[in-house]
Amino acid sequence: MQRFDPNQLAVRSGHFIHGRLVTGDADASRDVLRPSDGQAYAPLPMAEADLVDQAVDDAYVAWRDGDWARRPPRERARVLRRWADLVEADAPTLAPLEAVGSTRPVRDALAWDVPFTADGLRFFAEYADKLGGEVAATRSDNLGMTIAEPYGVIGAITPWNFPLVMASWKVGAALAAGNAVVLKPSELTPFSVLRLAELAVQAGLPAGLFNIVQGDGRVAGAALSRHPRIAKMTFTGSTSTGAAIMAACAQHGPKPVTLELGGKSPQLVFDDAPDVERLAGIIAGAIAGNAGQVCVAGSRLIVQQGIAPALVKAIARRFAAYRPGPTWEDGPTLPPIISRQQALRIDAIVQRAADAGATLRGGGPVDDVCGAGAYYLPTLIEGVDAGNPAVLEEIFGPVLTVQTFATEEEGLALASHPHYGLAAGVHTADLNRAMRAMRALSAGTVWINRYGRSNDFVIPTGGYHQSGIGKDLGRQAVEANQRLKSVLIDFGSPV
Ligand code: NAD
Image (cartoon, rainbow, N blue to C red; front, side, top):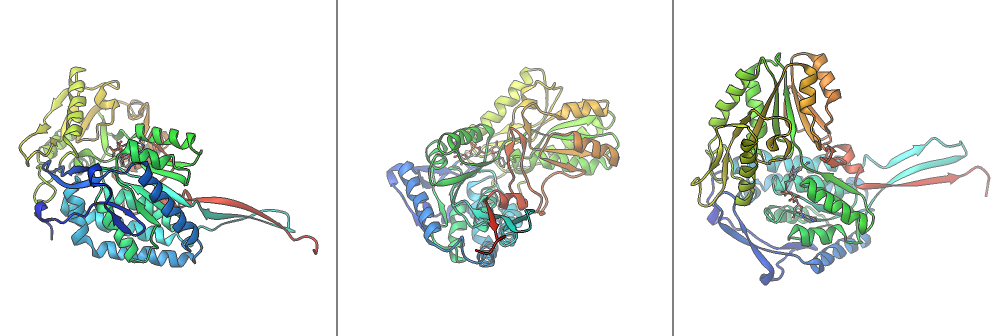
């Protein structure tokens, strides 16, 4: 099944505590809207601090009294692998559930989000018995060791742009390392992860090891971050929220944080980059995909003067070909913006860019696509300097700024951003230049002659500067869910 009728979809709502849905207080619920048409489609209970307490305490007791952390790691891996298989097999249910409430077209959810979520869980399962610690170089009548141990209960908070995938990165790594997790998903996309949790229990995950609390960031998210039984927080979202969570963790702990935050990633293109048409496809896709609502969106084109006219023309042609439409249709190529408020925010930055002297080429908001859904056509902004708001601010929409340069040095200077350092693309046929740029760019990820993550989960992802602290994915993500105990044994003299 691909195309579906959103009105026929059964959506189950609630928190998820101790292996089952908890409906919560009906008076304290809020309607969740479908971004594609702005219609309310299910009520969401909004947790207050007492419900967060309940979810965390339940996870803590399940972790402390259960055997998840103590059972043979390969048994943990087996549960996670079984979970991944169930997720994959559940695609006909999960994909429409993901699509109806988010900006993910059902076609993409089936082809990518659901299988990618399952494969991510498998990746973390493979690490369950690989990271136990190290033997230290001590004197020969001593044995020194570090032993990797789980923290206990990890608090996870995720954004709305890829609800299943973002949650699976947090939860998979935490569980593989032997922890329990309490997740607070975005209040805008809260339902598909409930199905993910149900499947985890079906796969054999003990009840309480993966709890979900629904609600507002400033209420439920803040209560989770400062909860004394949350031993570590892992967060994906905006830089300002990441800072608030870090402050809460410092004041109510302190406790460690992993933060995956915002970005304003450059695409640095040199004159010798091969195949302008292919390159235009990469650059257009990297900013128009998911309507630009991607943390690593390549939002700043920094292009050398020789290739600039042909490349910008080819990108503009591709931008013009995008067709907006709801996530439950097969044909559209441009999904909605998550909310009307977010679409207004995008347009406000674009208008400020124009007021500051920029030239807009095409794009902009479009009404009447589907009910009250908010759509924004891919927009090119030329004639911007480094201080233009569209160059400085994370727009989180399909808006690409264009800046040109003459020399490699100028290009590298333009590519650097005063705050963000999430990702960068470099496009050139000259290997030496590519390597120089890779070294010079201050970003957590550099893609050369491509743009975007692959299925190589072993490559960690995370930002420099205000784009984050720590890594999701890779061995590093599992290690971030473990703490190290140092052990020194003296066996020199008979007792
Ligand atoms: P957001 O920061 O508004 O919200 C993210 C989550 O934090 C939500 O669940 C929200 O309820 C919660 N929250 C809000 N205020 C809180 C508080 N005071 N305490 C605790 N929790 C709180 O972000 P968003 O709009 O959902 O997502 C878009 C942002 O996420 C963009 O900036 C994007 O770049 C970033 N992002 C980063 C990555 C990455 O890997 N670096 C991936 C995806 C998205």
